[in-house]
Length: 130
Image (cartoon, rainbow, N blue to C red; front, side):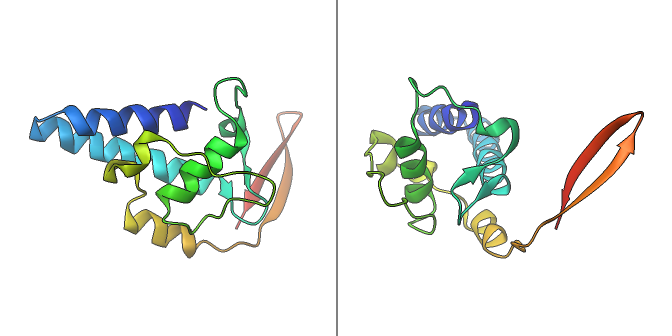
């Protein structure tokens, strides 16, 4: 939820801010949002991993999230069957689009993951290893 909200608010800022230095910062933050989204999103299962998967369903729902991802990636991330595309006024703005270089990195991420486990200080640490 927080990343989607940040993406929407930064897109609004980009459309109203005129200062070049501020716009450069906004572009960097937008790119970081898209990087965060795409490095934690699994396309085939439509799952968003980790704490980033938290969502307040009354504020934002799966159709909304998938519509943002679909629009922002120019259709590369598809809306799963059973969900409907939800239009947002932000979609007509270029600033809500994923930067090409980040989308290309996402397309080339290896999709096989193995899980490694080890005991750390008496607890179990699990991490995904590509």
